Length: 112
Image 1 (cartoon, rainbow, N blue to C red):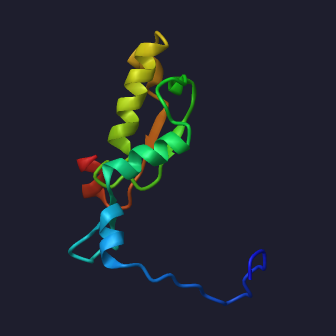
Image 2 (tube, rainbow, N blue to C red; image 1 turned 90 degrees about the vertical axis):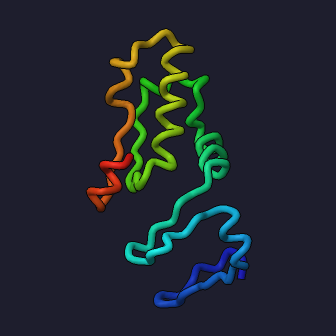
């Protein structure tokens, strides 16, 4: 089926071992919002793969975190942005527009 588009209305499911899933994610125990908390090592890997690294002039870019939650991605992104400013001789004020973060839940936005 490789290379074949899925028919309209067709759903694909993937069964994951619970242990494998919790190795990468921490699930919201309350189950109220379907939140998933990404482990720090996974966040670091994703940021590296996306090229969001301190050796680049991150203050010259704009990154959007559309679901900031408690800051699993946002905190490492800020850390990398600060380091990038240091490496590129920029003030933090120059980086104030480089990150945008949003969340549907006000309490999460306040935490981040």
